[in-house]
Length: 265
Length: 271
Image (cartoon, rainbow over all chains, first blue to last red; front, side, top):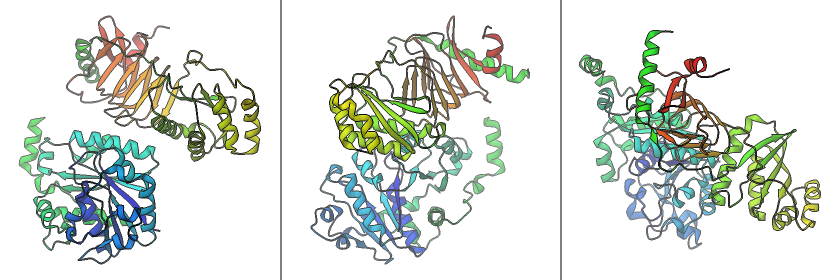
């Protein structure tokens, strides 16, 4: 049986879909079979990030309506054959499916795939309820901003109420220089509020935007990037490996910045 | 006492009192929170009636699940539970949902107290097990089934919660609330009695919500969004103190004051 992991955040624009796409790719690269479910009905993006938009024929809705088989709707990735995407319908909204139906889909996929990753929409309404219905584990994505952390906190509470017990935290878009200068919340600050185990921190990186626009997830890129590295590490930690966290602060922890911090206090 | 600590204590208490002012309209605890009570080896689970709560069933059920989970440690597994529903109508499905919630924390429903005939019938016909049915059946047959319980009758037993209250969570209780865990920003606790937080207090707390100005708010680490006691409201000082120690908020002559717990018990509590 595969593991069902939902990737969620509460707030929009913090990098749920980017994380889903990259973690899916990274897990597939580590020789696991992975199914990605886009639960963002009406505002689907995951196919774009994976560069699979033009291959989508059927969506989850057609599967549920019995108009096609589940296998027919799964879009196979063009680079890694162990990765498939179950796209969301774009012409409907979140009320088009029920939590029960999402459960059916996810459970059916666990029979064949090691990992079923569900990309959750922003918000805590029906779309969120659908996305978390089947999940046993959750990855909370947040950025070091109070609004994102507040929403993440609410979502953690809701997940706990829905008996999702394994919850891990990804802090995305960190700018170490700003953290050093005390202008941004540090990962410790975020963790102190959320009290959820940290599974990864990803630095802010322009490469992410480039990769998104090309539909080529960062973890597949040949160019080394710190954010790609961080995402690969998260995938390995999901596998259960004990990987050390990247030291994002190292290049910024200079004598000058230390002095500056000292005098700022 | 270490002089540095004492100074920190002074600076943290004065700005609060400056900013406190009478609150224009003080919210009352019109709402009765569902609560659990232990009574000779069994648990009583009180569900508020629709007139006592504005929670929809879905939210109410979620509250039930949350409270059951946070209190799990406090009672032995396989404890028997009696459900007190008063005027609330429960159908088969809702009853089953409650039973499921109880089962996940290893509790068993044995009896249902209700004033509504339909609820009693639903319980009787659901048939969880025969012995339970036997207990419920007589109720179903008597036209006016059980029983006691009016909102006033509920004495305010302290509510003990072992959980972190996250953003969006709200606890209302007609008595004292004890929380072992943090109150995160965006959460709120409204109590008719005192509020004790064995953890960090960062949300909104309202003690003595029905007007008792003698109520206090205590926390290991006091960084509230807002403190309210009876009709008074206070904001925390803008700048956080360098170090934290347990503090008590109470009403002094000129509004809400905060004092270090160590000093408070020495000076303020009369024998």
